[in-house]
Structures are given as structure tokens and as C-alpha cells.
Image (cartoon, rainbow, N blue to C red):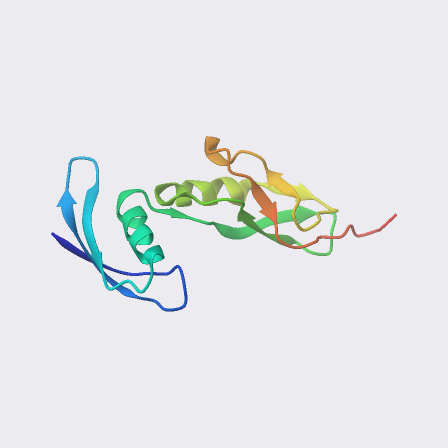
Length: 127
């Protein structure tokens, strides 16, 4: 069985042709063609067996002129958890001050992955 992907690990965007077998649990990769580097091979294997993503979104802030602070997961999470993770983060709130790099959620959905602020949210009335 053949599958086709575009590698997203570098700007080259290689068109990958992956051959393998679909088993009960996953797709077992036997060969990858079209990659310009070894990262393409690793990307294809991971994407077809256990895809993950870094999640970027926002969290509501109280006590600041900034109403939303951009956040991201500190590590990738399983792709099939993205919608549930978005729902958890959508319900989350934090209070100013927030500094870039602050951990706003310490263990997202039991994955051990932290959600961190990507910008500052200063308080309305600084001390």
C-alpha cells in the first residue's frame, strides 16, 4: 500500500511516497522515497504511526488591558487530542501579570505537557 505526504520539517517541502502495510493498530512503514534528508524519513514514520502537533492558541487574561495572551504547548501532543485540548484551554483563564514563558497549565490532559505564555500581559495598574 502506498501513501503520500508532504514533509513539513524544513522549507524544502519534499513530496514523500511511503510504502507499507496497514496492520490492526497502525501503518507499518517499509520504505520512504522522495525525501532530501533523513528528517523526511522520520517525519513519514511518525506521521503515519503516532502523529503529534504543537498546539498554539490563546488564553483569556483578567486584570490586564490585553484580553487574550498567546500560548503554545511546550511539547507536541497526540494529534487525536487536539480538539479536547482546545476545549480545556478555551475554558482556562489567567490573571495579570503574565510574563512570556510563564506556565499557565502544568499538565494538559494528563500528558505531562505544559502550556506556556508566548507574550507578556501586564497588569492594568502596575505597582
